[in-house]
Image 1 (cartoon, one colour):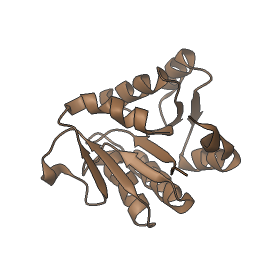
Image 2 (cartoon, helix red, strand yellow):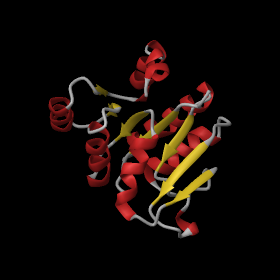
Image 3 (cartoon, helix red, strand yellow):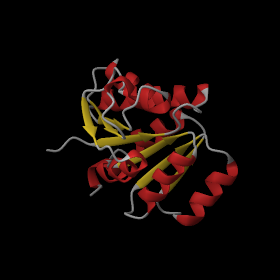
Image 4 (cartoon, helix red, strand yellow):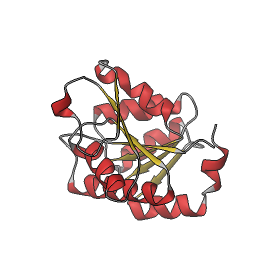
Length: 168
């Protein structure tokens, strides 16, 4: 049986402390469930914190990297997938994920959300501002869940664990 892959997306340098905390907690939760944590693989922001949360809880981590510059790789990365595609790798991120969880937002994250909508991925938005939540909910009301923090996202995943069993 294939392991479930949870994509954790969010800002790099512009991530807030709250974004980082949410990402860490989602990564830790995924590891405890035996799920794989996938991010953009870099050593900053939401990417790094989600991988750190997973690794510190004995999880498996994947990073879909924009470059082959190893000094930019997260120390918490198990499997690097080097694309040398810059932001083009965002499509690989979302297509490889069974569900996409977003911790904060910037332009790169916005592209990942949009790319995840097109193929019908389930997306959990954590802590985004109201205008962003409204915009994405209007685009894909059946795919988007807006929550305030990682606890609410985890509660949803716990209650709706079947969602991950039925995802294509």
